[in-house]
Image 1 (tube, one colour):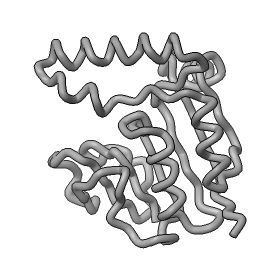
Image 2 (cartoon, helix red, strand yellow; image 1 turned 30 degrees about the vertical axis):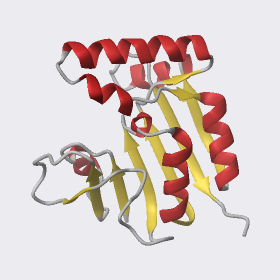
Image 3 (spheres, one colour; image 1 turned 90 degrees about the vertical axis):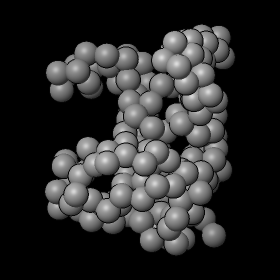
Image 4 (cartoon, helix red, strand yellow; image 1 turned 120 degrees about the vertical axis):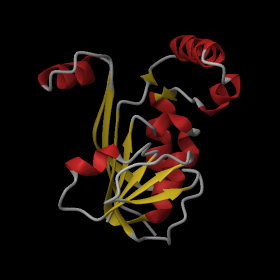
Length: 172
């Protein structure tokens, strides 16, 4: 089973045709009729422990503090399960992270929803690595910046992006 966390309207499910997908989002968005959609917070997934094969975050990992999101993924993933995340902002230094937070606050204020800025958490790569290690993940691939940008350009999407694949290997 794949859980699409922060799914919006569940658009990613069309690329996961052979998988059972549960799309979870905090917003009540009409989406695909062929996908089970659940309204819930990614910091408290309405799933049993160790029941998910893939925790999938498409442009959504940054909508909760990284330690909360990674901890919740670890709770629901089966041993050997994968955490896959892409297109969430990741930064190597606090200055660039603060600039991103300011841009986000301005964006949401201009859009008329200033309260939404509190849900934006640009990811510190060092904190992400620490959260993954502390929860028992083996990082298979982590790209932020130039490497991720090259990956997206190969897919015809020239932009700054990120890509993460980690396997859950609990030690207990």
